[in-house]
Image 1 (cartoon, rainbow, N blue to C red):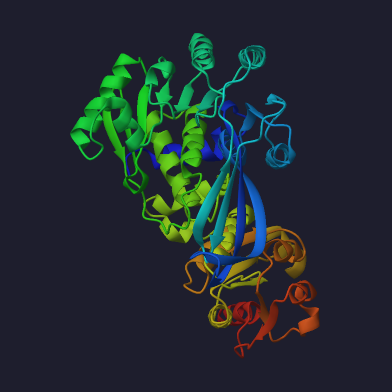
Image 2: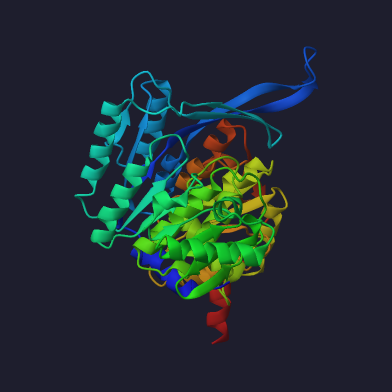
Length: 493
């Protein structure tokens, strides 16, 4: 991959929290109606979907803002909605994500842009759009534009203009924001829908996809030399810092003053591409806000989009998930390091696994001085589920349980050894006396402990049985325990 993964990792770990970003653009609510198909309707040759679940997420500029907040940045969002129930759902989701929504205006008599998708058996059957794109009345337009320019009195580390052609980003707003940002040397990134890129002149970067670039540059999208030449021509004519072209499975191409740079995509299992472009723009803006150059920021955008498409539906990719994706690409680290993650990243993996119909198992322990008994136990546990998560006691937790002198091996090394086992899919460290918080958050289908426990004494057993899961007691390997290993070692000396 082009770009410095070390620089990217440092920026994500240390450079993102506290950075401020302003997002201006078209807000949307994404609704998902999920069910199963068992028959075809007698009324028309269409599938009959039995509704099993309904959920809502944010889309458009709201999704860009939610992704930035999930990456740890302070985000202010400006746009408008209708005065309806969908506005309330949209703002509730954004407030829960930690986005400042005070500048989100209400336009009476207008509906909140809402896209409703019907899914069955992990496939999207149909999408229904409820939206209004007509111009605002002159006085409403003037009030909104004044509100947006007033926000620029504050200092931001980056500004994103998320244009979905629903009317929020007029030519005047785009030019006013870009002019004010240039005066303060604040990076402005534009995710365009309008094919007249002239309205974005002077921006730090425009982030079209390949088809948008081809249309704006009047070239054939299949003619790569012509595409690159068109990107450079537009970059130069519009006085842009960079043209950042998102190309789906082909990655991202950055055309800046130093030349052309290709950032290859990592192969991922794709469940849903909804919102992946918003995720890429958010990660790109986050990287630039943290001081990365365009190529390193594009590497982060590429990895974040790869995480997004592994989810079903529109999601905000967390900082932990992005760090995990970086670890998978870093030489000498790869999948082993990526298995060790925080709870948020573990939960994101659980969501992906369950979307694919897989069962999730959980076990926990100190796993100090990993031995044959541990390996056999974990292999048995993995044989009773599709994916196994191991909750690992932190060093302080082990000391509290086992006394001074334990653990013998520090938690990072213990986690690394566990991650090296094929039976283990994820290792997450906890510091509490019991793993109950992890069990309640993960909601495993299978909870495993050793046969030296009684089932009712297993922490989380009642909870797992309560949601229909199973509690299993794994057989023990006689003669193997960490204490026994330490005693034998002492005898040998």
